View 1 (cartoon, rainbow, N blue to C red):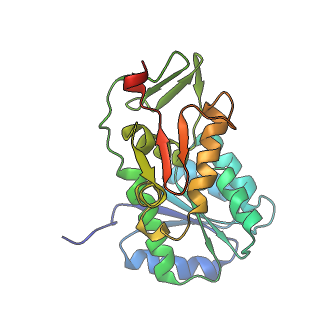
View 2: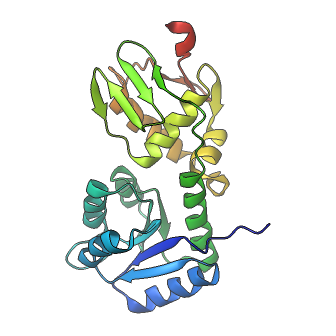
Length: 238
């Protein structure tokens, strides 16, 4: 049965109307419902009005640029965001990811690439299984409740970005086992990202900064050099 995205709502944010028309045409061809905003302020209002399933957000815009708009979005929503940037510099890509973007696409891009990336982000966002139920007591310091999407560290809630949460889910789901870089890329980001190993390293670092007492000497997320990562086997360590 062919995959359908007919009910998926996409908000396209770009100050170039020609670019919006180009993106709209290709998304609607694949069944998406498309709304548009010409600047960051309109995007924030449309986010509230339309409640999109995913946002395609241009970086270079007047007034509020894409990074500033993303910061505001992340204060009120965990909606998946793909950044559209004309720049190919690593710093710009990393900045977007640090602010909570789920992915980025560099202009000029092919319509098929953009649609494929949007579908991949939606698949991994919607496809997480709630197979681990109840409160997981990793140790006296760290507790996780995937049903409630809550992470407790020393009695305080820790806020994780959507990608960080998905990465932690797949690590904990395989606690005690080594999960390879390729497996994490496929599970957390999608098969299309098999050539982007830096995503895994970057987000492992983010998780360690938030969860580990000493990120340089991690006790929860362990590195298996040249292979991947392993979450501590909390069932045996309790």
